Image (cartoon, rainbow, N blue to C red; front, side, top):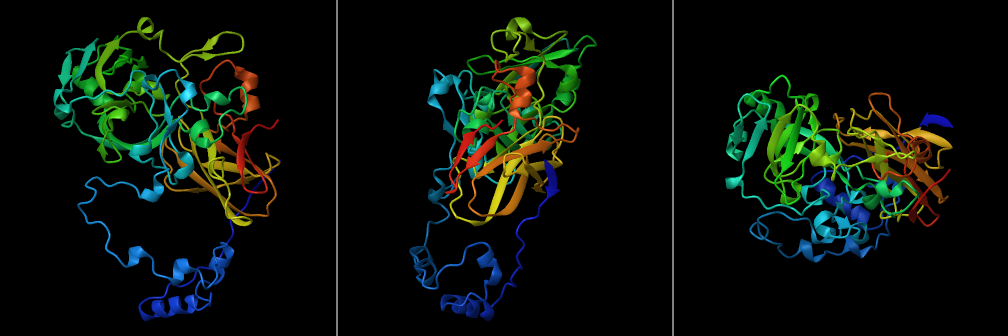
Length: 437
C-alpha cells in the first residue's frame, strides 16, 4: 500500500461583482457568456446552456409572496426535504415499542445531528413525563439522600458539550457479512449533538458519596425500568445530567426532561428519563443480567465491561442511498469518524479497495468524543470504485478491517463492530454494500 496526501481539484475563485456590476454580470451570463462564472462552473461540471429556463425565466417564488412569519410557529424543513427522515427496518425486532430507527447519515453534513433526525432506541417505548412532576432521587451509599426537581437541577452550574451517542449494536448486522444496503442502516444508530446540563459529579458531591461507594445505578422512568451499572470513576469524570440538546429541551424520544450522558461509552448506558441514581459498592448484576449487552466471543466466553466505543468511520457519500448522479468529473467523498477515547486527528480514504490510501481533509471542530467530518476530492473517470475510510484516533489506535476484527472476536456478537466499511460504486455511479478480502 502507498500512503500519500492528495489534494482536491483547485479552481480559481471569481471575484463577486456588486451593485450595477452584478446586474451586468447576470445579463452577460443569460446571453450566453460564461466569463463571469469562468473556470469555477466548468470545473464543477455546473455550466448550463444559456437558454436554461430555470435561470432565464422567473419562477413563481420570485413573483408571489410566500408564507408569513405566523405560518409555522415551530420551524420545519422545506417540503422538498421531506424524504430526510429516520427510518426503521421492521424485521429487525418483533415490536416497534422495543426497537430502533436510524439517523439518515447520508443526508447530513458537518457534525451536528438535527434533533428530529437523532436515531431512537427504546426498550419500552418513549415515556411522556410531565416536567412539573419530574423528580430525580440520589440514594444508597451517600451521606444524605436527595430528591431534585427539574428546577433544582437548573440551579447548579451547567455546561455545554458536544458528544456522539452510539448504540453498541451499530453495524451489528454486518458481523457475518454485508447485510443492509445504506449507511443509514449499517451505521445510523448514532447521533452527535450539543448537550446542556449539570456535571453528575456536582450532584454526587451534594449528596456526599461514602468511601465504599464505588458504583452508581442510574434508573429510567420508562416502562422497561432501564438500569445500568457505571463505575464511580466515570461518574465523577465527565458524565452529564442533561436537559437540553442543540439548545432546546430534549425530545421525548431522547429522554425528556432529563437523561444521563456517558461520553464515549455505549449508548445503552445513557439512561433516558432518568429518575433515580443509587450508589453502591459493586455492580448490580442481579438487576442487569436479563438486559445487559453481551459481547460473545468465538470460544463461547463473553467480553466484560466493554463500554468504550472504538474508533470508527464511514463514508456517507457516495453510498447506496446517495449514488453519484453528476457523472464523470470533480467528485466529493465525505463521511464521519469518531472515537470513544478521544479525537480523530486523521482519516484515510481509498477508492480502490485499499491498494492506495490518501489522507482525507478534516473540516470543522475537532472535539473530544465527538464526530469529525472528513472530505476527499478527486476527478472520477467513470471507473468502478471500492470506497473505504480508515480512522486514526488520538491514542494512536487505527480502525481495523472486518477480517482483522473477526480474527480476534469471531462472529457470534452483534456488538462493537467498528470494522472498515466498503461501498462498491459501478460505472453508473450506483453504490452497494460489499465486502472484499
